[in-house]
Length: 65
Image (cartoon, rainbow, N blue to C red; front, top):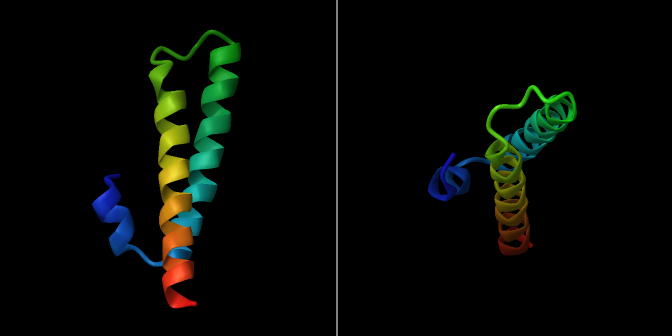
């Protein structure tokens, strides 16, 4: 998901996206520990997406307050 797409979503949708992404991150870490994760870059991409989503959530909360 691109940053522009994130900015179009609501805060609730972004919070759900963060929860889903954290589950995906946990799954990637488990696969990595079992040596079944083929693309280890997925971990850093997922972490980056979580951080971007949290940033957009914070921007929206500040602008509404």
